Image 1 (cartoon, rainbow, N blue to C red):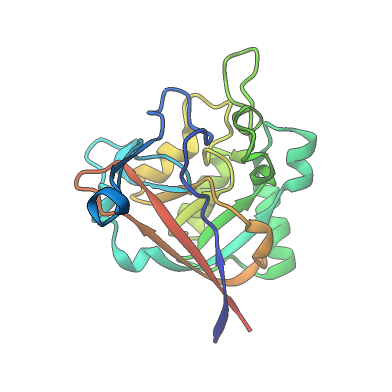
Image 2 (cartoon, rainbow, N blue to C red):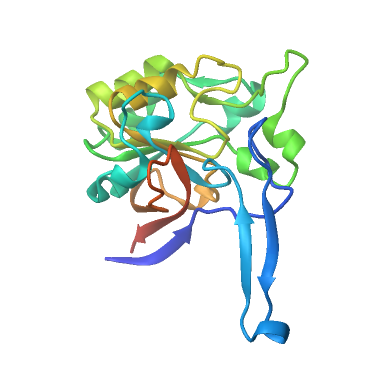
Length: 231
């Protein structure tokens, strides 16, 4: 039984952290209760705004778009790999094979078909967009992520359905080639970025439900992400 639900989603609002060059979030009132008898607002944002899912089409020519992601892959068991201390010491930290081995030594083999979530502690920076993106003198963001080697192990050897993180990218921010993301897309998997409250999840045992908008032809979409925790 799952009796406890954790919302892993950040609210969408103007001024939130955005990937450099992404469209700004704009929200305006179209109709008001006082004037029109109902409230309606118009919202403008990019497909990869806030807590969001990236479809394979984001990196892979001919890859499936967000509305084509099989629904059964959006409801999956989730595991959490914690690299908070390593990320504090090195903002460019990339998950490696040894981190996966250590997790499995403690919790057992990573289950086939699960979503692997990387907890870096970066959500603590969410209300400071400058700190969240952490762009350096090299004009690159600096935040932790999955190395291409680790992504390959998790996808090809463990059969994971998706990768997720609490930063703005599953790749370390200083990887302009997006090697983990491109590998994931080439294998037909999706990714989840800008997750919230991963500290509330156990290393294993949660059930993840990801609900993106079914944007026709979308490279991704803002999404509501829930974790159901066991008794």
